[in-house]
Image (cartoon, rainbow, N blue to C red; front, side, top):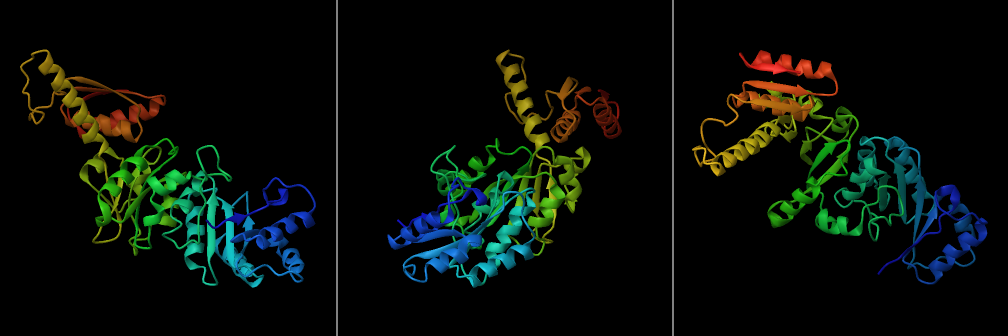
Length: 374
C-alpha cells in the first residue's frame, strides 16, 4: 500500500524538537527508500529542495507540501493563495489543515478542495466543528482524507476512525452528485442519528446516493449561510436538535401548521419547487403518539375496556393533566401536542420560570379553556 512519511517538528504542531538538518535528511531518505509520498512543511520546503539538488527525490515519490494552522481557519482567498504558492514552490500535492472555530469553516476548506485547479489538494478543518470537511472529502474532490486506526488513536483533533469513514459514511461510494443530510445541534457527538440514517441509506442501495452527517453548530444562521445554497441541490435537509429548534423555524422560508403553532421545528427540508427551506415539527406527533399508545396498552392490560386499536379516535390524554419538563423546542412541542390531544391541564416545569410562564401564555392563546401552569 502507498505510504506517506511525515516527521513533524514542534513548530508545526509535531513532537520533534531537534535540528532541522537531520529531520529533513530523514524525509529525503524515506523518499530514496521508496515512500510513495513525503510530507514536508511548506516553510521548510526551500531547504528540503535545496538539499535535493545533489541527490534528487525519485520520480516515484510525490512531495506533499503542507501548512497547519492550530488556531483558526483563514478566509478562502488567503488559503487559495497559499495553495497556489505551494505548487509554485514544487509541490506535487498541496495540503492545508486549519482549525475550525465555527461550523462554517468546514465549508471554506471544502470549497478550497473543490476549486484547487493547479493540482491535487488535501484540505481539512481540524476539530469537531470541522468534521464535515473530513467526511465529505471525496464529494468535494479532495486528494485524500485521514482516519485513525481506532477510537482514541487520532493523530489530529477531530479525526474519525477508519471504520467510521468506510462503514458509516461510506467514503468509497461518494461522488460529486452525493446528496448531503445531517443532524444540527450543540452538542451533537452523542447523537445516534448518523449511524441510524446512514445504515438506512446503505440498505437502499444505489437508488439513493446520499450521506448523513453530524454538524456541531453554534450559530444556525451562519451555518446555513455557509452550507445551504438555494440554487444548488447538494444539501437536502437537516434534523435539528437543541438548541436550534426555535431558530430553525425562523430560518425557514415556510413551515407546516404544526411547527408554526408550536413555534419550533426539528426538521428542515429543501422545497423541490423553490429550493428554499421548509420547516416541520415531528416531535409532537412522535412523542404524543408514543404516550397515547402506552396509555392504551396499560388500559388493555388492566381490562379497562378501551379499544384495542391504536387508531382510536379519542386520545387517552383527553381530560388528563400532563406535566412537561422543559420549555425549549421539544418541551413546546410536547405541550402543544398534549393540548391538541385534549389534555385538560398542561403543567410546565422549567429552570427559567419566565420561559415556563411564556409557554403557558402561548398555550392559553391557542387552546380555549385549557388550564396551563408554569
